[in-house]
Length: 255
Image (cartoon, rainbow, N blue to C red; front, top):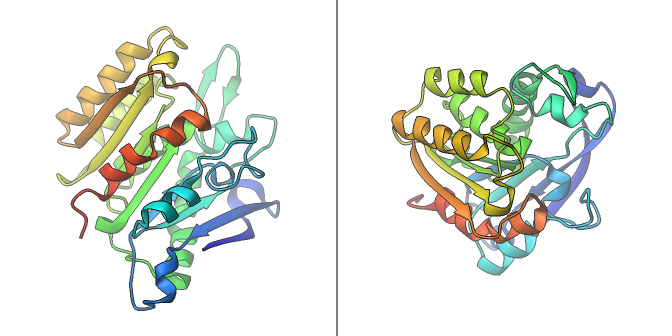
């Protein structure tokens, strides 16, 4: 079952509507006392429905979840589609200047504060969740992948596991380095991180930066599942193929 409804995020876009999505396993109808872990996902419009997806191709999470009957709730919120770098601003933990993009005000902190203080309490109050940290995960791709790393490191008291697919690690590498070194993390923190082999050359320092971030996560004691996807590219069709890998990591050992 998927519920889709309109919401507003006042601190980010005032009264402008965007959509939220919740997937709840169908087995809940037969066993209403069952409670489930929750995976929060960025770019919610790309998660379930092709007709909602930016480029006409979604991740196909609904079909995957139903086919495999996985005991998990997925909560996802649409991004900011403002052409003036709205998504980039909301999904950047850091303020930075870029020769091509100009000055970007990072509002990732505002995005996360809304998610954990407004959206998560709503989800926990209205759906059969296991609200504890050990059952609360987060995932995304590209800038959403960067935000997933930010969330699991800076809000580690809320999220115990994260999946970062093709994360935009080339944004503000110095600030990212500082965050990874200084954020307090529990020893049970789990991170899945990947990058497509075909996108490694999209930025000059991508190989080095990916390796550096992986090393920093390991130094911090994070339980890291890290891979380079053979033939992987920067698109929903490629990320859909990685669902079995990151879902296995997120649910591994979860009782």
